[in-house]
Image 1 (spheres, one colour):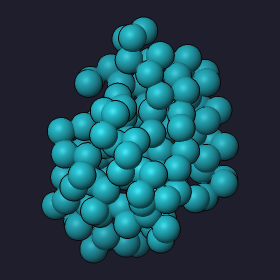
Image 2: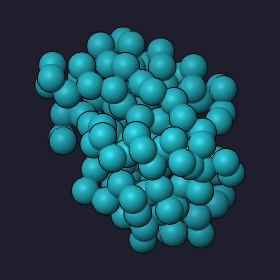
Image 3: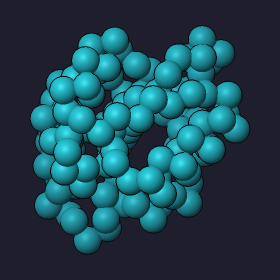
Length: 120
């Protein structure tokens, strides 16, 4: 796990609240996170095969569904409002490994990150 933890997790989002939460949880686990909000930059970073890619499915500046398809084969987690069931379904169909409600993601972030890295 140390080798995976030393690599940078990629997080595609523009939500400052979640950026801080993810960064804090990752630090506690000895991981680092690179945050991007631009689709072109995210596509380049995905090509580097990060150990995990986190998507805010509401990130309008990045087209998360297209990026999820581009990240095929990589461990991915998406988060979205619990009422956006259609978007959850579309993310799963695009190949997102795990899709969780924003509230559950925020409450269980450290465990979600730890589990995602250990499994992959």
